[in-house]
Length: 305
Length: 162
Image (tube, rainbow over all chains, first blue to last red; front, side):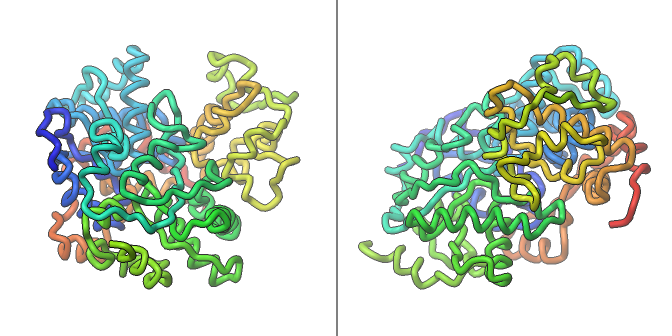
């Protein structure tokens, strides 16, 4: 079943940096899968890093806003809304769009700089993470009907990334402390979503970047053990930075004897592909760092099918 | 109650003095990633520790903040720790006190347009998947903007090694 071709399902694809540089297979999955859901992705020339909403923003907020405004202007020149694969990019671009709309004086100042490179941001630009697009434009019920192979035997906990839903007035999507909409989307793929206690906790990646590996692993173990305690056999994320942190963090934590538990990590795009009938090999599972539970996963994916 | 003192303080008055006030009720610590750092716990919170520091712009955990905004969401005192943290980070960067990796990240963005390096493995993986090579087509514009805003100049203030 195809979604009827609809103008609003045509987007400028904003890839960001982490996915094209380190996880191109997620880009591949999005490019291959989204058209099956009626989502047309348009590649535009000239996008730069969003820029990064933590370190780059902390370095210089005005340049951060101006570079984000430049990216927005590129999409606006083609009359396109932006679809992102990365929550951090979403947060940067959506913040810039909203802040500059709210503060016309700042927009004038930003445009004075952009004029020098031949760009201009006229008004707000819609920027949405793909999960928000799936929820709002397709919806869990339609998604459920469109998938080919429900992942009914997988028990998975969802970890929500820091910028996925926050700040709420900018992201305007799910509850950052208890992301039920994303869990509904997972439910639509057939997944048995496992609730757990440490839901609002960060994956710990900022501590890794800041050189505090032991503290960072503490954050990973705390979450993974809690998910496991509640019965999860794997964990899912919508953020690639969190994906990397849980993959590397779990390998490191076991190496350091901090825990005996390892949960396979899935990006939502990988689960979407599995639910569309792709195999573990086809989604690139061999490249995962936590892959010891492959047999269990194979069994779960074939049980009762 | 304590009041934080730093150069950017005056810029925050628009948001009200209350936003600089924290009495360590610990609610923010329930969601803050920095609380995983050794030394922090229920009775010692990062936000209070930062706010009561004599030199908050060089606080050792200043750049470990994920910018998740949850401290702002939950604070019953309506403090806006994130606003203060970002302002402190800007001061720290401008004065050359930010960790070297922050300058390196900004430099990489200005050099390549991306915050992560494109390696040979990246190119190989992309080719295998039939994906195009990432090209920084707007990089001249990015560099020009960074010169105009003064960011390029600030990069020179980086201190210390990697």
